[in-house]
Amino acid sequence: MAQAIDPIIKNVSPELIMALKEALTNLAVPELNTDAWSLNILREVIMEERLKICVVLPTFGLRSEKNIAFAIKKALVEHVGDPELVDLFIYSDVKPAAVQSIKIPEVADVRNIILVSSGKGGVGKSTVASNLAVAMASLGCRVGLLDADVYGPSIPVMFDLEGEGEVKGFSDKETNTTYMIPPIKYDIALMSIGFLVDTDAPMIWRGPMIASASMQMFHNVYWGQLDYLIVDLPPGTGDIQLTIAQKINVAGAIIVSTPQDVALKDVVRAKKMFDKVSIPTIGLIENMSYFMCDGCEKRHEIFANGGAQEQAAKLGMSVLGEIPLVPSIRSASDEGKPITALEPESELAGLFREIAHDVCAFHALQATAEVLPNNSVLNNPQRANEAAPEKKRRLPVL
Ligand SMILES: Nc1ncnc2c1ncn2[C@@H]1O[C@H](COP(=O)(O)OP(=O)(O)O)[C@@H](O)[C@H]1O
Ligand SMILES: [Mg+2]
Image (cartoon, rainbow, N blue to C red; front, side, top):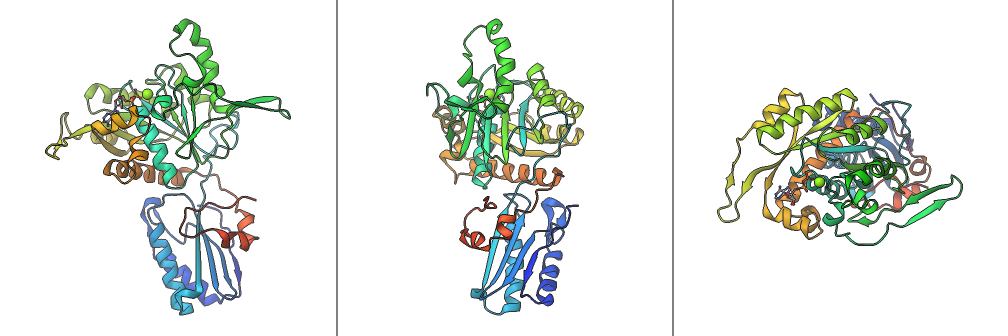
């Protein structure tokens, strides 16, 4: 359980705090298997001309956020009488992943790295990674996407960045290091092996370059501060995957598969690899799960249904989502805009957003490292007041 952080309480009666405690204790947060009080979200309760309360949730995209806000407001209004006198500020913060090994250097300013893997190519790994990145960013997370698929980098096409010229860099004189500056699209910092290595060149030439380029993409890219860096891995369980799994501190891995049996057998191999290197498996995504016919709006189960569920259960992991085979997913990617960015209100975008919620919750459950309370909010109420409560909020950094 998280270490308790004492909230700042000013000019507020103990009864009010007790009322808040009761309201939050009675509110279940099912996605985190706990109640809202145990999450230790209360940071400030201050009575001046108005009653100001500030809470910090342990992740973005918490499905219970609305319920928490409602419960707090209700308790406060019952106490104060006038809802107009209450200011509620809800922030979110994302914890860094637990460190697997102190020998592994952290990727600067990147709190969590999530691998998207698959047993074989062509199952939609890049499609899932791109749409998941867009969906997580839409929940408020700061997201980067690293395309490590040396056999078929697709992020340049999927984000319409092909032939954009050389990646710009800058030198940090203090550390004598050169960093590449990732292009940003839809609020996502992007880096692809396709930007760095001529992927049409013969393998014998690009082999050694690829090995070093994969690592450079983690450490020599100016990612900025990220909550999540999503990594589109090459298919299978080869050297590159293993090197990344061993040399990078990873928060969790997602396995993408199609419903066919063969692909599902590959799932076992991928799961075993992650187990071996102690990387938690977030879950399985079944892509091209069924065919959505735009003529009859019917769900056609072309392959046997339920295979992913069965396999996931056997391996002790969950199914994060079932994505249908829909022509618009492919055409959107080909046009350089993931469907979740192109049609954010669509049902498909909704499916990816649901997965994003689950990934955030999984992570909040797993992360053991505690982010220190951000003093800038606590000691600078002015700042907290500036934040627009209806917008996605992160703790302001001074
Ligand atoms: N759910 C889907 N519906 C329709 N087309 C898809 C779907 N998922 C992927 N595709 C298409 O299938 C092809 C392979 O997908 P991709 O994401 O590149 O796979 P991978 O990265 O695993 O090799 C691409 O043309 C992509 O647009
Ligand atoms: Mg790919």
